Amino acid sequence: MTEREFKKSAGSTKSAKNTIIYGRTISRGEASGTVLLTKDPISFLGNVDPKTGKIVDPAHELFGKNIQDMVLVFPTGKGSTVGSYVIYQLKKNQTAPVAIINLECEPIVAVGAIISEIPLVDKLEKNPYEILKTGDRVLVNGTDGFIEIL
Image (cartoon, one colour):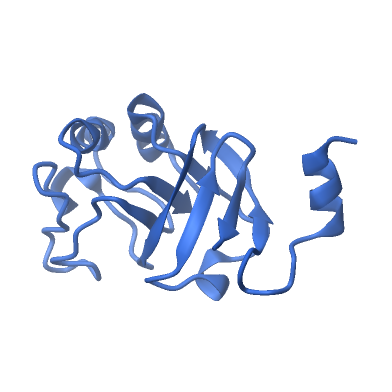
């Protein structure tokens, strides 16, 4: 049994800090940062300015907020396949989130995260909306498929 299988069989720890929650690896890598959470799906083409990292759609819950250097938590992506390239532009412009957590990732966000080397996990054992809030600090380990609340 690997260390991950052992930890997973024991379940997630109960305390808020240092809680480890397993999910599915989408994009490898590891990053930690501050959570910016929305229950709205994100279309990177049209919702996000790749030059500034700000959410520019006035109808979006995060309108005016900046995703740069945040752990961005949102249910899923939506919209044009060009969204993958917008995520890549965000990374090149140093305005990208440091990591992404989805309820269920779709191909547009997955491809964008992979080509931009942004760690991404989805399908967590626990609903992220029940355990995370904006301002929390988390580590996202896309390589081993878990998050840790810091």
